[in-house]
Image 1 (cartoon, rainbow, N blue to C red):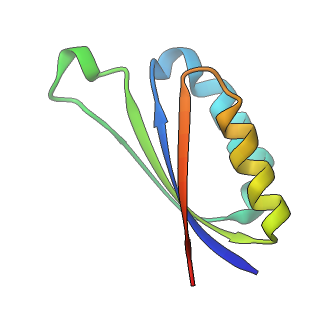
Image 2: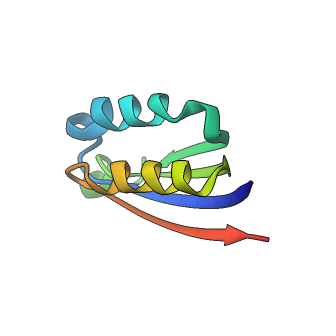
Length: 83
């Protein structure tokens, strides 16, 4: 079992939210913690969001999640492994 923290950056949430949510639901059994944030104080960044995930599971499943997220338009993902 591997434990990873993923940081997801989402541009134009109104455009990308449905595909992102579908991907997160597909890998829901790996996600132990999810925190979503968006900037309400800046008009030009209101459509941008951030999601932090704690993911625990087999390395190949976690990598598949990260690959699927990275393949989405307007979505960037970075991760770090916790030991």
